Image (cartoon, rainbow, N blue to C red; front, side, top):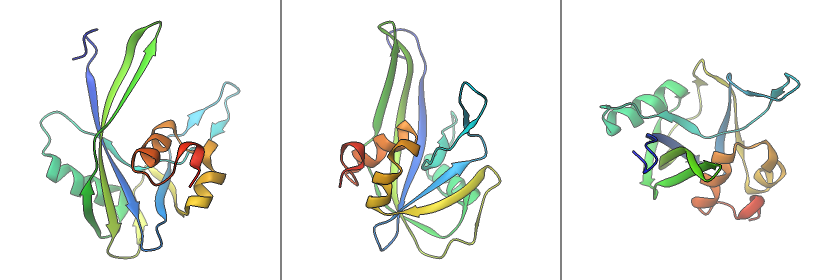
Length: 153
C-alpha cells in the first residue's frame, strides 16, 4: 500500500529482442478509444498483471506461452520500473513493472486471442512510431536503454 492507501499493482513485462536487435511489440484486441469513439492504435510490450499468490517463475513461462507461440529464453531480469500517476497532488495509480529481457529460440508460429497483431521494430522504426507506443512501452524502452527520449537512438 502507498501512504495514501492505494494498492500497488505489479505487472510483468517482456522485452523480446531478436539477433538483429529488433524489439517485438503487439497490438491488443483491447485498444484505447479516443473521445470520438475511434480506436487508437497503440503498440505495447507483452506481459500481464501479476495476480496475488502467483509464482513468478510459473507466471513468466505460462504468460509468454499464452501470448506467443514461440520458444523464448530469459536473458536477464532488468531493474524494476515504477510508474506513479498523480491527480491533484495525490497518488492515483502506482504500478511496479518487473521487466524481463528475452530472446526468441524459434520463429513465431502464432499468437494468443487477445493479441491483434505483432511486429518486429528496429530502433529507427521505434522513432517513427513513437506516438503510437503506449506510455508504458516508451518508459520500458528508455529504461532498458534501447532508445533515449522520444525514440532517439
